[in-house]
Figure (tube, rainbow, N blue to C red):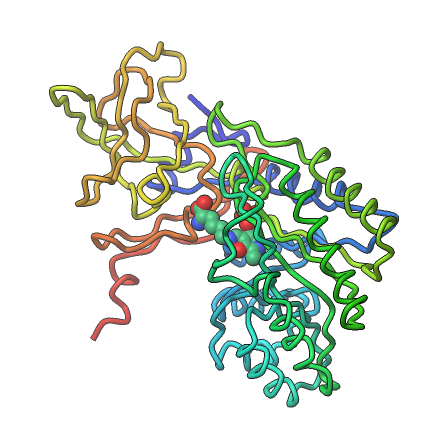
Length: 418
Ligand code: LLP
């Protein structure tokens, strides 16, 4: 029987039912501690923001706080969750391309330390609102450096029309955003943010981003007399989903980032003092697994299906991105993998296939199927499609589990319905 953090999958399934999201707490802790350890520099003040969109709940935010991380939130809901665990608001960064008035007011009220503005209109609205703030709010602008690293290869041209941020090609617009805050004693414009993609395997993409950003910071200084002190490089560090993935080891990617930034600093003599990164996926993905119970199996002319008691409602990624995952039959880990299966969910949609063409031991109803690396953008992108209740989430550490999110009941699901 396969175990997670010293607890058997069967015991987890018996105790908490399935589908169940299980996090190995020590793996989460190790990732947080590694990021904090390796992203340190003598040249810059550094900060690691946990991108809570990857998985936001009270307990993960408590952990992030315990490790001294900062926090990236993109909505009133993510901010509210941070508030509920007294996350230090000076370490919170509020992102988003279309923050509502209510969200901006909430950020000011909560005492959020930094707002990342996305565009000129937002800057103008936020500048007015911030005049009522009783604390000084740091401002970054999301710029778009024209680097697209959503794939295994990064592309330096293109992607200038992203919905996020202001393109570096629109320099006048960027200057206007910065100047918006000139007269406001409740705001300080600190620098730029960029995020070039997710699941990035190529460390040169980060190096290219840094060069572009430092070059642009210098240009602001020379051409416009605007002195900036912060560069936020965004997230995008890859996780290992299957054997096909080989992310750059964290010490190496951190060293590349810090060395490139230092070289840029030496070469260009900017006033950048603070360097930030925003990992989400790489912190939580590998620590998480989903346990399903197998139901019926079915042979079609060309396929062997094994059906599970969840699917695209708890993990939309295969359907949405053709994301690949690995899995095992937890109670048959001693048996040879002789059958090629398609693991399909129970949703009324042909695309609700979690994994296609995976070798497993012959499956039958009641088997426990564990899908690995579901810790990022699984629960956080879950839906109620077909009115499936959201699964429970447990953290396991040293052979002991604790519930961090209860399983939803049917009553919960319709609680707001009239
Ligand atoms: N910072 C910003 C501004 C972002 O937009 C994102 C992710 C992150 C940080 C964290 O990126 P990460 O380290 O997790 O790659 N739903 C997709 C991923 C969308 C990522 C969106 N932005 C998926 O399931 O693959």
